[in-house]
Length: 356
Image (tube, rainbow, N blue to C red; front, top):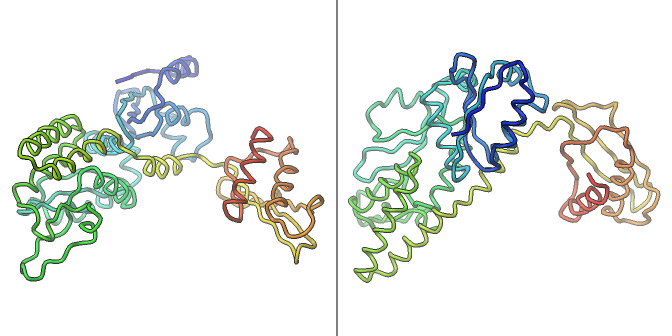
């Protein structure tokens, strides 16, 4: 745990020293007020970038209010964004921080639940559903902020520890593999290819993983792999080996992109398009959004001067080159380009050549 207190006197100096020592790795952070109460819990793909962003960039009114009450920050590293997401949910549940809970009604938060069935199912439920069905679940994880986030989490977890959300068939004559079974992401509850006892071992590891006990999961899988090898069940042992590899090399890039990008304060956004009539009368347009609102006084048109014929990519290069020569214009935080890969590559090429 890394902790730093920075009161109003010499705040900037102490904060700068604190951020300097923060890791660029995934983790969770707890913001506290002067009473030592946790008022906000967040997660990050890079603790250094995320925590520093609160104090060096403009924010909306709610975030500004949060920052004004921060007296100290605790940070804890995790092995992955995936682990940080579960840790964040655990800490929100424990501390009920003011600025997390105020964002949503408790009943609208999303939870991952594991049922008490003979073949336990992994499901997604809202807080209001949990209130109506108390006692139906052997484990509850959350709260999480959105269903999209939870679906992304479960998609990643399923590649590490395949689990089932389906019920076993009542009629063995009507056995039909589920969609995930075809992908190798369901261990076979739908086809009765796995016994309740064996499946509960999977659920046990899943609960440990959701609880942040990854090392115990690894130890369990290693023991299972060794047992299967001794029994010369090499196919099953190889499957466990692959699980271990996935567990040790969690690839949460997709999750990180979705979550981290959603938190980047894109103050100024510019969009570019090129139009022409059979290669003639070519014009490039630039539209600008400031804090999510169109700013028409910033819009610009560019008459194409150096490109002849139909060549949208070269026209786009000309537009961007001319745009970036205007040092008096504010630089964008994000650029949208109408087109495909060629246009995007052209934009990247010009941006790099002009040190943007």
